[in-house]
Length: 215
Image (cartoon, rainbow, N blue to C red; front, side):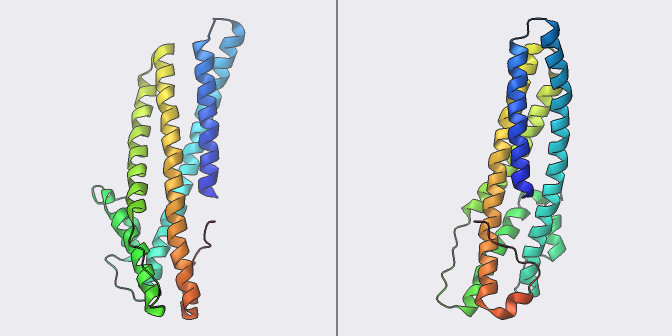
């Protein structure tokens, strides 16, 4: 729900930026147009603040979920590369955060399936993990482009450069939505195998906070 809310706010932001560009490009130096511009100069930054707040909340919820998904395997004595806390800190430590989220996500996805196979020998392990790489690449590209768009806004000094910067912000918002969809797909895939593990053997029901699959 947090990520769906984030997508909705991003869509609203895109519409506001498109409208702001329309107003700026058709500015005719009248009091009515000036009033529109001044109002948008207030509304657009406010929507940006909402985006930052909801993004921080989404990151907190996601990392908490990710940590518990990793910890679920530790609690059932599955051999893991890192500690439960280490799987979370891998998102924030410079340099390490470029690759550890991918390796830990793959660990969760593959080792959860291997745990299922221990109970059900007929279960076929899905080794296709390219969606995890795509998820993380989208996240990195989104951060890079968002920073670039922000710099363009800071450097804008007249209507043409401001419209140009807004265009980059719109593209950034679109990339952000695609990146969020990548996160939702990752959550769906991992939660699906976690739930299957729980259903395969009732003794696993004590595992901490297995989520409900996203349909």
